[in-house]
Every structure is written in C-alpha cells, then in structure tokens.
Image (cartoon, rainbow, N blue to C red):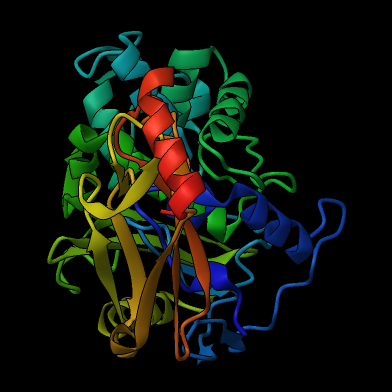
Length: 404
C-alpha cells in the first residue's frame, strides 16, 4: 500500500496537522537524521497513489496547496543543491522585513563592490548606484539577479553571511526541516542544501503569507539598466493558471523549477530538480502539472460549521450536542476514487455531561474499496452543562428502573 501521506489531505493544514504523531513517525522511518538515502537515478519512477509515474527529474514533489496532500514524490527528502530556487527563501526574509517596517519598497539601497562583482545570473547593477527595494525584488524574482540578492542581504543584515543566518532562522520558524543556507543567491556551496519537500512548503508559505507581493512572480519580464530579461519560469504563458515561482540551475543541481498553478480555485505546487536541460525542465513540469489536475480532485465532505451528527448527552442541560469538524474537511482524491469513498461517524453514546465546546468527542472514519483508511477527529460544537442534583434524579431513576 502506498504511503498514506500521498493519498489524502485534510483542511488547510493537511493530514500532518491532525495526526502529527503519525506523520512524524512516518517521516522518521523514511530517512533517519544521520543517514542520507542515495537519490534514485534520473528517469526512475515517482511514487503516487495511482502507481509509479516515470519522470526524468532526480527529485520531485507535487502538492495540493489547499489540503497539503502529496500527489507525487520522488526523493523528496533528498538534500540537494537548490541553486536559484533558494532565492524563494531570500525573498521570504525580505518580505518579512518589509512587513515589519524595517525595510520599505521605495527605500533605495547602495550597490557594493561585492554585489557588483557577483557572477552568474545578474540584474546588471552599476557599482555605487542606489536602487529601490521594489526594483531589487523584481531583479531577484524575474531576472534571478545574484547581484540584487547581495544588495538586499547587506542592507538587512550587514553581510551576506549574516543574512544566511536569518534565512536559516526563518526556515526553522516556518517548518523547513532539511534546509541549510549559506548565501542569499543559491551560489554553489557544499553546505547550501534544500529538499524538494522543503521547497514545496516554502512556496506554499510564501503564497499564503505574502499575497500582496506574490504578484511579482507572474511578471513576464523586467528591464533594468537598458537590459530587458524574461522571467525564466517556463510555465508562465504556457500552462493555464501558472503564476510563479522560481527556476534554478547549476552544473551540480541540473535544471530545476518550483512552480505553482491556480486553476478553477485549486492550486498545485510542483518542485522538480536534476533535469538535463531547459527543454526537459519545461516539458516535464508541464506534463506533471497537467497530470495532477487531470487525475486528482478535492472533495469537500462538509464545512467547518456543518453539524455532522447530534450526539445524545447523559445528564446534560441539553439532550444532544452537535458534532462538528471544526474546519472544512476536504480530501484530495484520485478522481476514480470519488465513487468508492465510504464515510462513517463514530462516537460514544450517550456522552456524559458536562461537555465543552471544542472537546474531541468522536471521529470520522474514511475508507472504501481502494481508499486507504483514515480516522479524523470530530469535536463538540457547543457547551452542555451538567444537570443539577435534583434535576438528575428522575433521569437516573428512569435509567435504573427501566433501562431507558
């Protein structure tokens, strides 16, 4: 049976949010902290609930952004060279400082000699010039400018090395478990590493946490210093709904992409790395994205405020208490599993008073032919106080004498 983390997502937090112990145990079984599994060869299959899917990528993961369900993964916990995809973390830190008020979009920052002399992809900043934070952000996001990364890092932390420390702190804060940053640009470094899974988490957080700045990732080109450069994301304008995020490529990493597509209210996030060419990156990313939208769907079982059932209460001031999910209960399922889904509610009855709103009092059992079983908690939707002593006497007598 496939790993059930691949199969179902629950609400905005996914399965891990409701069953952290299970999710943690599964993660530990996959890769002990002191042992690194070798990456599978390029072209070997990825794991999916529907069986193996071939991909040229050395590392890959496809995630439903709403439920957190993993639709496809291959070496997703393999620490790899992320190249310029790590600029997503750079901009996450930049956006945090803008929101905190320690940096402004219209603030102009000086271009140091270190920034000016950066190699690789560049914004072509002039030595000694001053450039606004907004233009530098566009230079990082659209042009993948290493020089712009250094300018922002030096302005925020004084040096790129100290900025990398801020990146590592932010990474731990938002749940990146296997990422280590040594610079702001993704410049090759033996200790600068991320995983495909961490990149998918980072992309999801960046979209959710900074919607007002995420729009930069969909801009198709940007001109600076008389040089216009296109956005390197090959899905923009090619795949309907594509609106970000970031490419990366080095000799060690191969060609990679962290991408997001929003279609009919549903967002998928894809990370691929280790591809042999720009063309392969574009074609493989498009193929896997389309596969995800074609083969999977989100099924809303009920909304957060919906009453799933009414549970009898023993010796309570109310005869029943509503049973609720506490959040929208959404499952990500292969389309051909929708008709096989079976849902059952289980709870103790009668439930002894008092009952507190938000108290876990039951569970939703999900299964069916071909659908791996899941158990999801359900909660009391209201407070039910215990009856007073005199009020309890008739109910106790009736139950004792008549079994009712």
